[in-house]
Image (cartoon, rainbow, N blue to C red; front, top):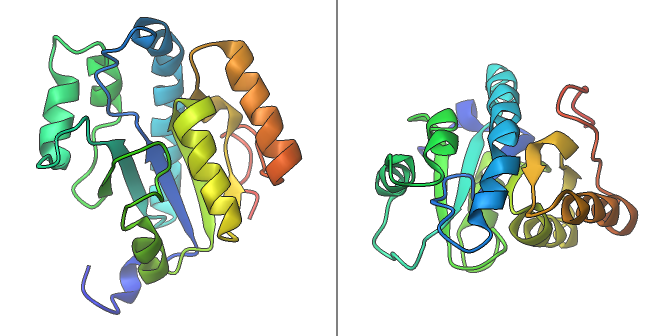
Length: 189
């Protein structure tokens, strides 16, 4: 984006957190089962929001590969040997999407997300992704502390268990005041 490129500015941004993933960890097989239907909901939401010119930002673990880029991460996760290949193919980033590698759970921690959101004029965030009770939750907490209005569509996050996911959504709503209506509802801001 060129400095002061007003065509990319919007008050809302969609964050897709850790959906490009190999799911190569002990609970990965279970998480994939919950994540495939979520990926389809995220894709539909992404298409709906892009029609409104909402910028899309992928926030993704770097898997310890500090020289990775979006294409390399995508190819690794979409590879047929990856547990996450179906999910990666559903949510393949578009050329105009943003991509940020993150070193830890929160999308804000040690990344340029703050600066990108400021440059885009974003005040409202739509958070989607995995794991809902870890990376989505920590990103939501950090966004809350920064004063963003937040929507976490309840059908657009997945955790290792339904119980964990439901508890996380309840905590986001009660403690952080986050809207958790389904992705089929109207954007709450």
